[in-house]
Length: 443
Image 1: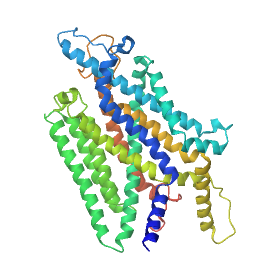
Image 2: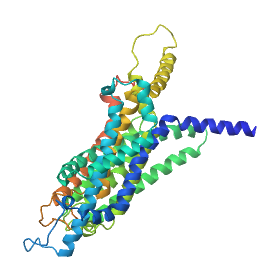
Image 3: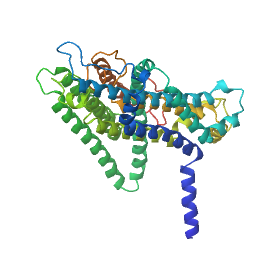
Image 4: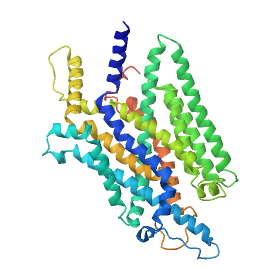
């Protein structure tokens, strides 16, 4: 009996950690290792890059300038070294982007001359050669001028906003799945209802706590109306989302609480980037890098959860597989069961032959995650565009880049709220003819 139970546990683990999941975990580990490398070595590599003349271009700041713009020689040297570290992060991010782009091409129709099974073997193996290729791409990136990476950093900032929206989609999907699973279990054991209540309470509590903290730090003066409006709008939106979630049959306060906590965190990290010290008591500490490590680690943790869910979730693959099935009518009464088996069989076929729907979305998320790494490890700064003048921030970032990053995050929070409201209302008001997995006819 003990051997039988052990075999059952092994079978369950083998089913959960399927080959496709293990492969995606190995790919995701590249991002996590790169982020840790950037955070640990950014300062050290900055000093090394200072000795290479062409790597200094765009990062040499001076203590000259007008009286209002003058900084000390020590501050200029410090800003230059911060800039060197930022351009190092851009190079690591760009190398990962190219790496995942090549993997995306390897499963696309551009490789039609390669057999499907050969493409599948390429995705699930050869990691030693892939790691060597990534190191080679990093070496080549060292010879690209800093001016290119300034443009890349701007592109990474925009893509990072999109990546944050994708994170919201994944987190909300995860919240829906947890709510449905725990809700079904609560029919047999009431403790799962308490788990749902605790999850909702913690989510709303975190959102309220971060909102109150934001009001304290970012509305210190009576004329900080913009910050107050943005924070108040988020609170009103959270109340509206909660009301709609309670109103519609498939809604739940657990996803609403997670969205509120996530958007409150986005606004906290966004308003912290405001360079105006009048309405940002954290402006000086942000310039000096104080507290940015904490924000970076929290953001990295949220991203890790979203990426982990992308890795282990099969919903994307299921959807892609179902879309490839012909909608031909069936004469059998068990048509639904036949289609379910066909979806399962097609999914196994896609995984076996490396078909595009099985890997396309994952590689796109990895490419966006690689660009997001550039913003995460540099605290959303654009460095490397100086021509020997005085930086507008001693940290090496430009005030324009910081302001744009702030508004990218604010706009992302608004998009997250809009998308969540759409997921609540769309099944009943505009897309009732679509199959959302639950009935809406009787509501």
